[in-house]
Amino acid sequence: MEGNTFISPENPQIQVVVDKRFAYVGRASFVIDKAAAGNRFIFVHITGGKSVSQMFIIQQEGFLPSSNDTYKYPITNPVKLGSFEYQHSVMMYDNDAAAQAEPGKEADVTRQFLARRGYIVNPALVMSRFARPADSSHKHEIIFFCFEDLSSYGHKLADFPENSDSGEKQRIKEKADEDCRNAFRVAD
Image (cartoon, rainbow, N blue to C red; front, side):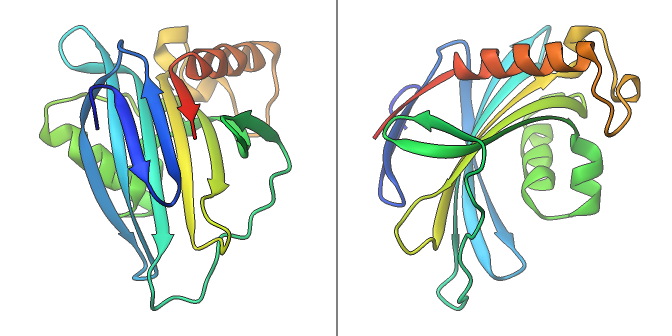
C-alpha cells in the first residue's frame, strides 16, 4: 500500500487507486478448506463514530500448491476495468448470515477483523462485485467488492424478498454500483 494505492507485482500485476473518502484499515488473511488462501485489503468510509457506510475490499486469492483446482467461472456479465474484463454482479447481501454459514471464511474473517478495530457494520448490505482469474493458469484470482449499508437507502433486507425484482430494488442496486465504480480505478 502507498497511501490509498494498492500495488501488486504479481497474480496479477496491478495498481488500484481507491478514493480518498475511504480509509485503509488493514489486511485480513484467510484460508478456504485447506485448498486456497488469500488476503483482503480493506478500506472503509465511516459515518458517526465507527459505523461503516461503505466498504471497499481488494481480495487476492489463490489455490495452494497442494491443490490441482483452478478458477473456472465464465465471464458472462463482463465489465472492463483497466485492460481486463471482470465478471460483474450486484446483489443485496446479509453479511452476518454469510459469516455464520461459513465460519472462518471471507465474510467471517472480515467481520471479526473490523469488530476487533471497533467498526460497526450493518449486516444488510448492497454488494457490487468484480472478479477474474489473475493468471493464465487460473490458479489465482482477484476480486473487488464494494459494500453499502442498505439502511442508508431507508430499507432492510426484508423489504426485498429473495428473487423479487422491484423498481426500488433495481434503483438501489444501480446507485450502489455507480457509487462503487466511482470508489476505485484500476491500472494494470
